Length: 455
Image 1 (cartoon, rainbow, N blue to C red):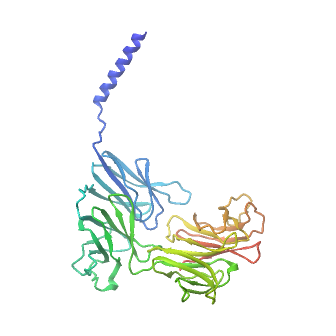
Image 2 (image 1 turned 45 degrees about the vertical axis):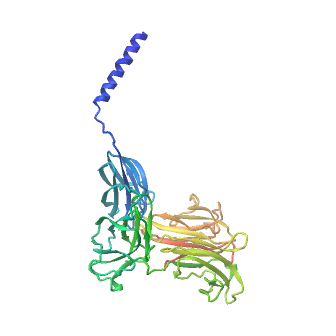
Image 3 (image 1 turned 90 degrees about the horizontal axis):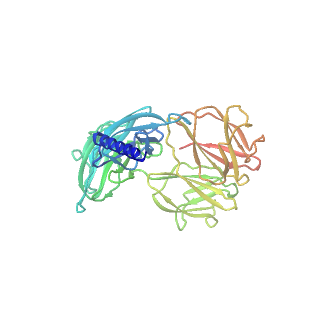
């Protein structure tokens, strides 16, 4: 019996060996690299897959990290949720026979439900370490623009007709070229427009430094409500991961101030030290300023009693980041101190949803539940959208389906009516972006639920 068993094992091994020799499965000889860029301005994040395996989730104007795979053939798939709560749908795919030492960038643009894919291919570059140049290429993914001219020049050279590096139509990419390391200014105009006429310039940076032995795709996107011009530009690192936002030098970052501390009274706001002239005057409870331009960098921020420079209520330092809108909420915290809550709002409309952000600023109700129920439906069986929303937490932005709702604010785990607020009618449509402040009321059994509008 033992000899028969050994013979059977031997025959099986020989058979498997024969099969192995006859196998025609492909053998990898190296690796290529892939990434994806989302260029649909109203898009939620895309899921980027190799076959069925997730590589990354890619938001608008973002690039996935570099992923490396054997030089075999694959189908790369792109999925996106076309409605709140809906499973992601597969909306595009691209088959690639990956070649060793080649780099592939997918740029996703066009209609969300049937996007276009632009595939950028290039050799993976090997640097010796002694080069004094960098490699840059330029792409156009802004559907709102026609053909554009790209000027990429030393800061000492003014852009002029004839000096453009190239002209791009939507979906085109200028192949990589080498430039000496150093400072450069990027200027963009409509094709044929004279950049000597500053009114014709669509976008222009301050000088920025590019290091040797780096590789970048400088890509033009449509601007959104988060941007300061009709287009936005990112410098995407093709050798490593990450992207840098390039800033239009004709715009300043903004701050918007929200007064949400009832006991603090009216205030003046200063942005200098020592204090000289108020930047905002007589800022009263529930007041909201417009977007106010401020220089980028570290900034002293001081609140005083209105009209009384020496009565300091808040003394803080903030950092203003170029190319950003910023919200500052003055609130009273749980121990009675007035403090500042900083928030970077996402104002970009997304075509598959509405979005709602809520901040609780009430000391008499330091935690609240927020319910959103179908219009005229009771609270009895509803679960809170936000459970125990604490005082002073940075606003949390939530996806909302377009329907007719009633909103209620209650004491935590208490659905007894009347509520602290509500029913409040809410009828969002696709693309809406709403911000809400829950304010203190003189009656501690009531809060004020206030929708704010963007400037």
